[in-house]
Image (tube, rainbow, N blue to C red; front, side):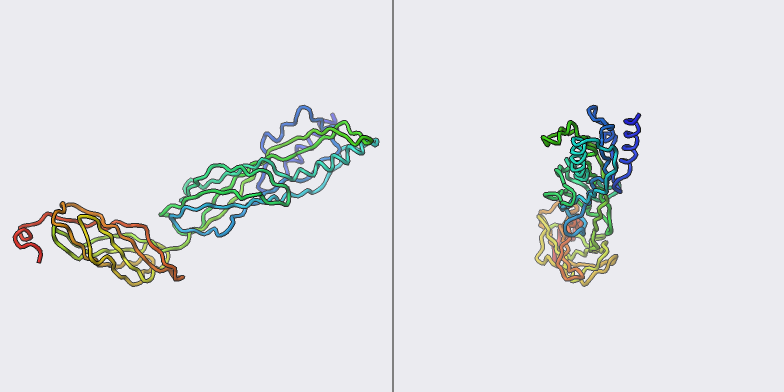
Length: 328
């Protein structure tokens, strides 16, 4: 009966613990060799692992970065509850030894970390689970957990949650057997449990300028040259200053002036860039894509470049006028 009461009390005691952490069902599997009736103490405490992103947590959309996450064990030993009073010298030695060994309840061993994002998140986790090892109370992991993430090019500026899952073993209870005070020897039986902690980490997608080509005006004919007008919109959240539109046409198109200067573009505004494009005389009639990159200055004065955009330009078949008179 005493053993049953002790088991119930210990299970109730273990339910309370670190905020954000919980024991798994495996934690309640008492080893067959463990005799709770022979316990001298129940210990109050457990590991408590906190996670912090090392360095900045602010990134640009479209970036692929490695998150370095520092793990620290803040586990605290809160106290002991007397479970059984020792009756002789050997038992006193056993009780003292058990108290020393029970202090390891705050150490985490075999830590495994995994990172995830929500189902609608624009952030892709590209790394698998990480084996961290063990962290004693009051210490940091020997090396940070590293996770590669990819931020979608269309991610909106703002704050996003990432979810760090930690699972680890810890010593739930210790039983000292056959203590011999004279010889200072004993046998020990340890009961390990598994704990899971879930933590939320936040990353920020920065405000930035972003661009799209919403229209092109101008038609080319084989052997001809024309001013092509590109209409560009700033679809981002930040102003772009000193904007340069740089085009890089490929055969059968070419240009002798590949840069058009545009004044600043506020978020949501449009601007027009004019570039002179020539079509080779052997150009096939169809729509060609001209690689276009936007160079701009941020409000902080940094120089940035957009991803390559495609400006559609149509080459039409030569009409009668072009065939008779060519290009003037």
